[in-house]
Image (cartoon, rainbow over all chains, first blue to last red; front, side):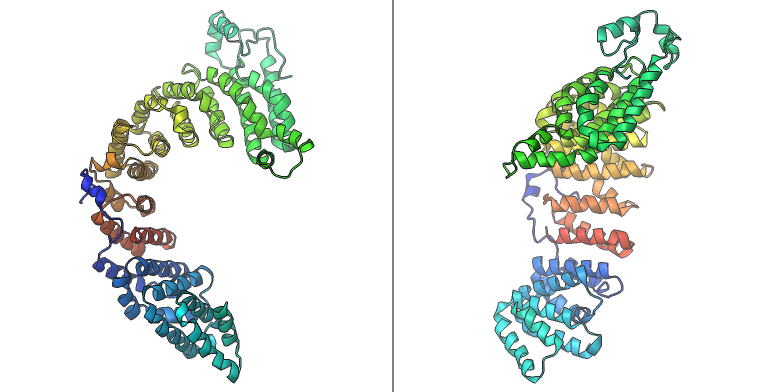
Length: 172
Length: 386
């Protein structure tokens, strides 16, 4: 095996960032996908944190992969009432890092989350979704006004628990 | 009763003790630890029993700690050099009880002490008196006398049981009052060196581990300025301990080097280069062998991490196979910890090391049970965020 930092002074000039190749990022995401299930909540939480780290430090490589291969699964996880505590914190961090990596995706993530919640109906957790939306809006403040305006429409139709909660979270 | 001095009691008066030791009593002392030449003198039994009573009082009456430090502790210290070994060991054991009680119940008073000294709104008066009487404060004032008397007893010619009890007392003292032996660093390290130089036998193996455990605590609780050059005098002896077959001795010796590395960091070729390199080679040797004991392996893994963090220029100049050995280990938990520590310390390890470590951690995550996975994930996060 090649030895890490050899005796030459050059080895001390090795950059501390950007040490993970694109292929390796791809492999990591490929492996992490299998842990994005509710069966082991601790591993799920850790996997989401690792995805967040990849989005933070290697956004160019990881973002398209996450968008295509992971995002749908995270919508469903966010809707699950079983995702609480540290796992919920991890999913909030994931969405926060995701919209930070690419500002444009926030406009797609919010409808995606709402759609997943609608599909699950009464099995979904409105509380979790509202927290996710609040996190996204807090990172991308540019969409705050539009999001609030969109959800305010529902107040006129009839105020449900979800929309009340969501508005409270977003406005706070 | 403890301070009752029989006619043939030598006490802590060294000269007297030596005279008596060299006299007619010599042969009888050699034959039996509990017997004196004068069979009628059974006063040591009284002293030993009195000490046991005191141990019971100390262990059950924490509210009396301050009074015990004022009235009993000086007497116990004066008896540290009791001629009769069983009494001496009993007195030391009693003092260990006192220290343990101080560790549990004496800290509250010390925190109050800190509050007062940092200029809080507390009124001076009764409370300041209480602070002066705090067990921890009183112990601190007695450390010098305690260590001086105890050190006189820690001679290599003493019995293994006696030496072990003495070092256990020192260990307990450092647990309760870290860094309190700074003024005695030189004689303590000299005594440790002499004892570690004794050949390892079935009888002395436990003594060696006790001394090494003490040294771990000593180096991790004292500043480099307090032990300074004395550390280099003891390192050859410890390097010898690292190569011992006895697994606990080798493991503890590695732990001593870990503590020493952490205390003296950063190290380079001109500062601790010789012993650092030898420790590195021995750790590599232990990790590369299949018959290495699990405890030794764990300690060797930890010291590899410490070497990379604290002595990077030295170890990077002498490539070894430690990372290969770590990754091949049947117990990945220790290796995961080492990789995490080195990665978190931002040591420049190069892209190849990062890539190989990430691939290895991914494999660990795939194979690990529930317990090891979380640590492996944390390791992966640290490697990604380097």
